[in-house]
Image (cartoon, rainbow, N blue to C red):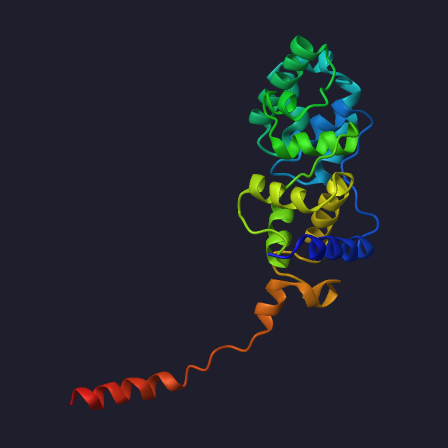
Length: 231
């Protein structure tokens, strides 16, 4: 893995390449961002942004959403996928907000992940973008990019979150996550566009991909020598 200094320098260069890095979900309140982030699971931010304007008009706060029924909510979020599970989670989340937090979104990781359907990634998104609390969301893009670059080393999102948080100042957590996510969407895709990457010279993945393939021509000769020795 890269050192803390190397990691910060790499993030600096990626931020210069993606100066517009931010969440692409549209929201006005912490409640709206919480709903939008839950809907974004197994979907795209663009699709969620198409659904949420009408959804937030009908359910502007936790109280109104808590009173919704699955049969009312499911058709409105159908296009985001997994609409039955998401409907159940959203209503459960809103009900818990009303019952336990007076309808307000709590500014605490422990309180957020205790809500139905809310995991660490979602909680970190809401904390960092809507509540002013440092958070470093780790999604599939952050996992892929950070492991390829060599600034993290794990397939476990919580492990990667801890590794990155340990070497970055708290004030940079949210922006760094946004930058890595955007880099994963634009450049470091599953099939990467390495020649367009600002840190190609620092990337472990790119370096490995550029190595020449091993020479396999010697293997038949080795086998032939072994046959001669046995004879």
